Length: 131
Image: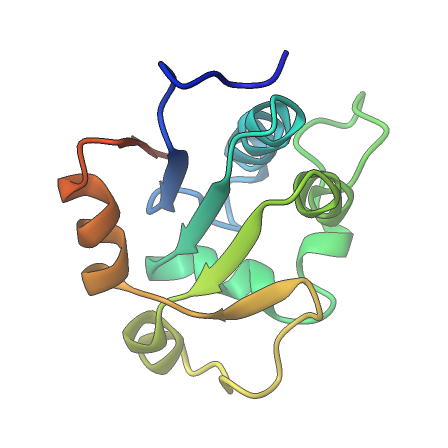
C-alpha cells in the first residue's frame, strides 16, 4: 500500500532507549521502519545514546529480541534498509560511547544527530517515533 498525497512525506525514528543491553527492545523499531518502507514511505532511523553501539560491527549480529525469534537484530536492521530505510549515527553519541565514526557497519548511511532529527520533527509533513 503506497502512501498517497495525503500521507506524510516520511517517517523519522529516534532510537534513544534501544540499548544493546536490552535486546528485547531492539527488533520493534526496525520492524516499523521496514513496514513504512514497504509502504514506499521514506524512512530515516537516528541512532543516539547507547543505540549507536548497534552500528559497531559484530554487535547487532549477536543479539536477538527473543530466543524464539529466528532473526538477529542485524537481520531486522538489514530488512529495514532493504525497504529503503536510511540509518544515521549521532556523532556526539558515537564519541560518548567511544565508537570510531569510521568503523561502522556498511548499512549505516552516514552521520545525523539532534539537528537533523529535530528538522524532521519540526517538519509538519514528517512523522516521528521515539524508541
